[in-house]
Length: 388
Image (tube, rainbow, N blue to C red):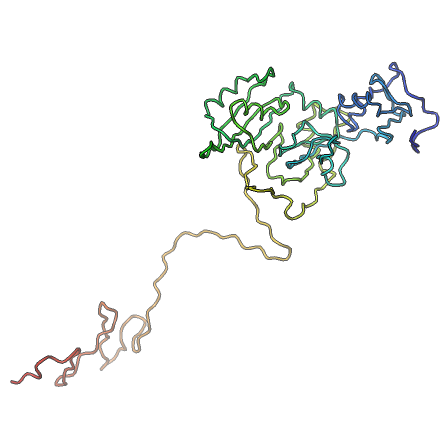
């Protein structure tokens, strides 16, 4: 037995099903241990103890003075519901532990977060939005098909398909005895190649069964080589970087999820308790041979303008304002000696006439005086001077 300094000496060894309080599965789910169904599996595995006694059945109630342990560690009391958006990268298992020793989502989460469980799952090779919460009851409610939360995915596949064949998925499809509900599929982009087409398809569904998108597209002869979840219910991946975590505000939780949360677990206030730290340089890029940049934004969402960031101490540029076109006066030509502003020569008796300009832009020379020899421009005439 593990020593517990918080355990009181007079605590009873377990309780009967008739005792007052809350069922242990619900209590551990509200504390963020796991969903109710998963808690029942933990009890069957002998990992849950009540007041030092290992439980063998979930038909037990706990009170405020009881001590519950999981794998020898005391389970803290339930906290107000919290919700996080996480951009899951490829190569992580959506599980707290993996029998094969593969890395998990919860191993990759940054420090400082509470104990969290996932709302739904994404397989090893699927990336995108994964919701995390500390409320097992909320996780179970949002996973149920009866809740009918919309999930939106974007798939890159290889093969050939027409929009007409994709439209048939709206009536549902049965594959190997499994019935899948209505799926809205839109062919976004197709690039033909010698061995087939590279396709981008956006799919919208409300069930989210195990490997549903991959199996449905494989039934159409397509091979999915990349799958991204864009949204889950009212929450979207948007521009959340790969591997980043962002907490949803308490007011948003009250407005959108109050119907799925116990009133005593509803958060209060408007500010989040956890602030995400900046990711290391290069951790937001998709690596690997042949990796290409692709838009993970939901095509149905409006594009928000990007605000330019300035470093500390830098002066911000003044915004440019457009003015109506104004007619500007032509630049004055070179000044001519002896001309006034009105273009006239100096006034008074004996003043010379103003010079005139030829089309070529050069000023004409003044008229020669009477009797003065005339200088001709250009080469001299052939044959010498003409005699009278």
